[in-house]
Image 1: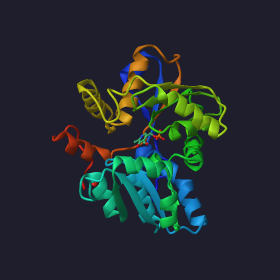
Image 2: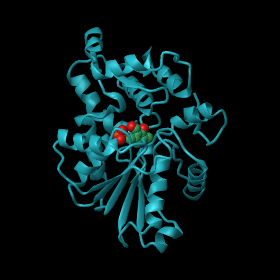
Image 3: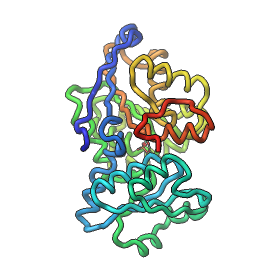
Length: 308
Ligand SMILES: Cc1ncc(COP(=O)(O)O)c(C=O)c1O
């Protein structure tokens, strides 16, 4: 079912020629309709491990619109595993929004907890492990060492050496995988969707925990547009214009901000001329329907397969 290796598409826009850059998009968004982008990469070895440990299901954590929740439910379903989602917000139910409906459609059993309880369970999941011994525990966002190894494999699918590879950043697992996979040969850039300089420390800790010593990377923390899930008209316009120019759909939470940052860096002359640049499309398109619903209007077109 999964399209591996994912396609890599050269983007030919006049602006890239003006700046003497060669730009590709690694289309991980096309890997699988419901386990797309970095989620496929992050889940691959974890699902293998769950099966090797004889587990019957996956148990994980997430917010109301989490791409990770939607993808974990779909991946578990495809691998004949059960899935349990601990969801932040006791006011929610499985029918509250398109993400939760999609997860529910894929058989996820959900437990809705208060924000305080959610934090407690994430910090100390021992009561969940006792209650669900047959389930394999995945952290919120799915980042662990197996997820990082899955993301590092993206580089094996690119048959040239990129001078730069760029990804959106949340927990940092995807970027850590790219930094590992690049092995110091080219520069990795991460664009944080979260507001705050804590991302630098957290990311460094993640590299250290995973003994990744490549330092050839830049983490950008100025393209969050006000914070997680926030945006302004310039980002809306950018995502719409980019989609018209390239026929590539971006999501407003992660990939839209990353592609915007790339264009901005290019305009600032950040990239060395004649560089080969790969933009990693990490998916996240299931989130558009929920984003529109939350805004109370259709801000972006949502691909039909996600309109649950
Ligand atoms: C679409 C998308 N892109 C990028 C990211 C960031 O990935 P990471 O958490 O590995 O930094 C996420 C979420 O975690 C995501 O859902």
